[in-house]
Length: 117
Image (cartoon, rainbow, N blue to C red):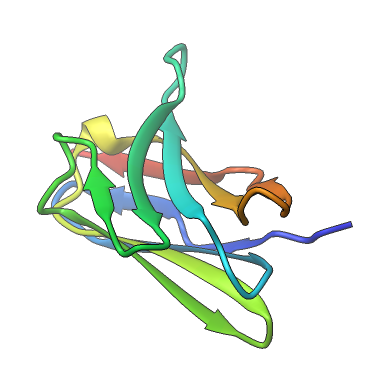
């Protein structure tokens, strides 16, 4: 069974920074993404990166969040650097790996981010 390894997150004061990271087996990808889900809210797409290099961000995080991808030892590593955190960024953050038409998809179990003012 594929293993998604997550790191990062935590409790941080507004204005602070965090880096979230996930890695999963695979040497290629079609689309990688970060989602977040606040209590009693639906899961929202935060940022995504495509194989052709195209990147999209949720409007409310553009300029503060940066998504990036690396590959090492046959694993895709997906990172989300978060700056100027706001209380409304409080949520569980989920990484998502789509390895293409013939490959599997993977979800992380969720990384807690809690921002206090």
